[in-house]
Length: 318
Image 1 (tube, rainbow, N blue to C red):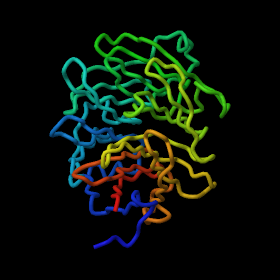
Image 2: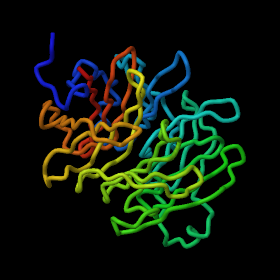
Image 3: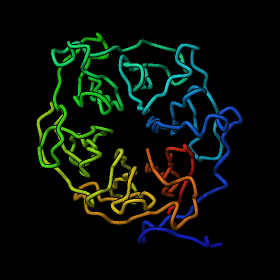
Image 4: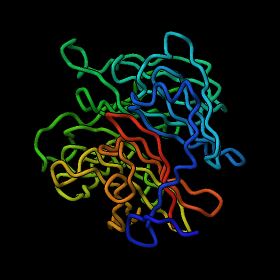
């Protein structure tokens, strides 16, 4: 049976899958506080989705999105807000990377919740003064280097060798100018573009995605509709082509519920605009914080988290 309501432009028109909401009781009690991001285990035969959840630990979602469970963390980490979740492999083992934006640290843990180590505040000259804020919002493992975006702080991207835990390099920094390249208003989220093999960094208040080489050099800037606030960018391969999804905190029209943008990952062409609250009736989706574009079993999904209040929900392409 076709869904009653769709949002977006075909072939990227999506319906709300309310039946895929089955958060554990403990997670439901903390859902209002959601302020993080999703990561997919890329290993063959895996595909689970992970999400660092304040007050609970780690939410793990089965690949078919039917079941969610909580993985507990040690008490000293369980109440922290992990602003994003990323997954990667080093030393032959897989870890989750969890930046705690309010606590000046990045926790490195196993997918089962065991703590490997904690990365503290960077040691670069830019962070020597205690007056310089450090509030990490996202990470990305590139080879053996973990890149950390300080989106709520000084807006540098810092690199650290995860095998030795030695800091390796730094680029970026804060700007209030929407036209200055290589610096950020808020370096809120970052990811690796699988087509161009460079970093894409969501510069939230400046309504743009900045492309940088993995060594930090500036490549280019891709504009979104003015006034849209992109929180991050997620990629998935679907029917032989790579696409990107961007969840926005704000809409270009003040007060209008925030959209999700679907882009071509090669050209950055805007292909579809999805409006979960306005057109699909997801009432808590006024502000979107993290959206995962997720392909599984030949189907395309958007696994979403709204903010203030927090809410978990799933959309499926029709």
